[in-house]
Length: 266
Ligand SMILES: NC(=O)C1=CN([C@@H]2O[C@H](COP(=O)(O)OP(=O)(O)OC[C@H]3O[C@@H](n4cnc5c(N)ncnc54)[C@H](OP(=O)(O)O)[C@@H]3O)[C@@H](O)[C@H]2O)C=CC1
Ligand SMILES: O=C(O)C1=N[C@H](C(=O)O)C[C@H](O)C1
Image (cartoon, rainbow, N blue to C red; front, side, top):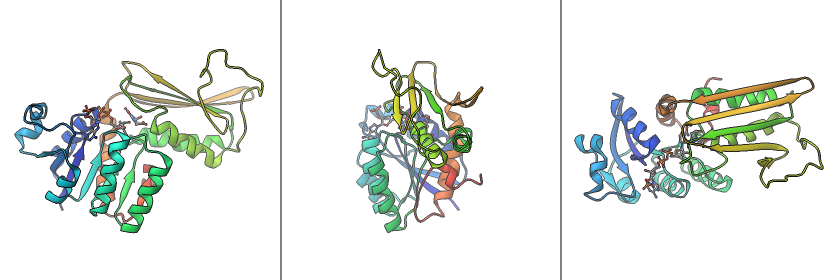
């Protein structure tokens, strides 16, 4: 069976890799892309797409009404992603969301829409299997090490902070960790933000520097010992097997799943 795919964000860092993966995968067929810049001039930015005659739509409505798509992949920005995903699901097109930065209420809205429409949707905060395992290991460790801080490091063009991976890691840790405040109750920031963001006593620090791709350390501290769980994506190739897995998996789904850990055999 061939899976007809539409990708939003084909010029982006992730979109470029996803276009390559989908066009190289024999069981996938890239039927169209969605991009906010699609005039004749800008088409030169799509050498791969132009050669293969793959249309680029500015309007997601037009795309979903014109092209028969089985799966829609979004790799853009949260505001556009929410609108794209809503439209796709309303048009019964199964959806894979890699874009980070959706709010909890947007995720809740998409969950209701997907479940009511019985149209599968996967929101993957991180497609790299190593990152999914890092989050699961952190959830396991937090039961025994409730004192924990997260340092996530990304390239300096990233829009959202903390990363979607860090947000999801905090959520998973909260499932097993007994809530507590960490450090001294009277500690003081002499430079605002020095202790990072904080959720139920868990501190999250976001580093943005050129030279990074996507990295996270979850550091647990206890009496006389520390435990560090660390994952590094050193190339965006690391995400592509997860994107492929999600596209295949969502074909058999009729509800929304948030996090690949819920559909992987781990
Ligand atoms: N889940 C995962 O494993 C991963 C998720 N990500 C996430 O994927 C998303 C994309 O990341 P990345 O590729 O690095 O970002 P880029 O900025 O490189 O790409 C985003 C693309 O989306 C386009 N875009 C912006 N607004 C719209 C719109 N309204 N309609 C259509 N297209 C639009 C941008 O166009 P323009 O250039 O004109 O702004 C750009 O081409 C981010 O949210 C990132 O956090 C990234 C890596 C892995
Ligand atoms: O923007 C990125 O690059 C990444 N975004 C995702 C996130 O916010 O966690 C996944 C990965 O960390 C790369």
